[in-house]
Length: 450
Image (cartoon, rainbow, N blue to C red; front, side):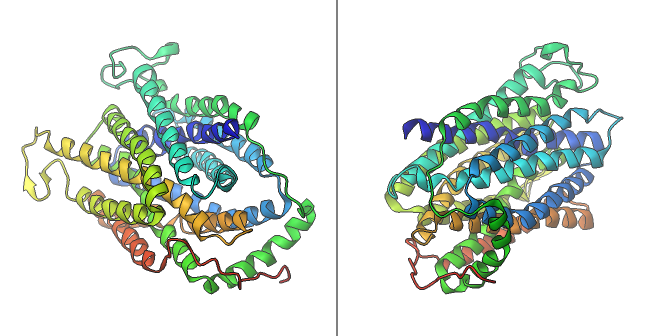
């Protein structure tokens, strides 16, 4: 069991660089650099990530229902791991002055889809790893290892690969390794192949050590596909019979989407508003990842002691305040107070806010997984995580698309991130109806017929 848990941790470690290096701190700011305009880059990134979210929303619940009935989650993880690898590697072709933005965004979306679907199936394994009293700590430790992996990958990128276009040197003054050409931004573009290879290497313990429990009553692939949609419709129809679960799915749907929006657009925002270079954004990412690792672990301990709901409420309140604060930080002023053009106060303030995002985000994601276990009906844990995936992905396009639209309409990056505030508040409001231990409703029975 211990090796199985460590194998499960390996997925968080292996997959985190897609979020840290590609979504937030290296490749997203590079897109802004390629396009030359912060608002245009934020809008294009919003549309690209939003389109991937729409596809995930359509496919996730159906695939989850099929896997729940046919078993064999590992084979799904293999398939989506291949998508992760191929999509990440394709980002190498984002050559300055000679790239197709549509194809690059499509490659990015393929890798993102692979990561998100693989995460759905690995998250559904959490209840099999420990008792009800232990899974909070297991979830928190998994998130912490993920952040540590992200930090290490980011440090390696900044010190060995990512070079400043002005100096041609990395953050520590070295030339990019492997003879990578700074003028062609090969050190930056290498983030795609680097992320792909990192995932392939560190998923080895997962595939060697993680084994699924044997389940009786699984269907053949054909039967599972035929029954998935009718049973999914029945499941969704009966959700209001369990108000606590229904409210939690709605709440997490909004606050997780807002948090993902913060992660996706943090680097682009800093590059466009504060005029940071990718190296500056990378330092910001290291700080946020370090606080994320520490507080994911501490949040897991608090989860075991107090339950996940107090952790979730505290984190959502913190992130709401940070989202409001970020909109009032620019190169010209901080919280309405004018600053000199050469002032470091905006940078320092944004670093502090980034540390808060990492800390609250790490604890929030860990506690959200264990809250799903508390809300699930006994004997229907995999189905519950399928619903959790549906809630998270069905609206995963709202934050990036709304940011893209508002930024496009206003031409302002600070105004463009205001939809995140509304999403956090909606999530917080719906938490009022979430019972810490769920309802354990035995009256909700789902027929297998249409």
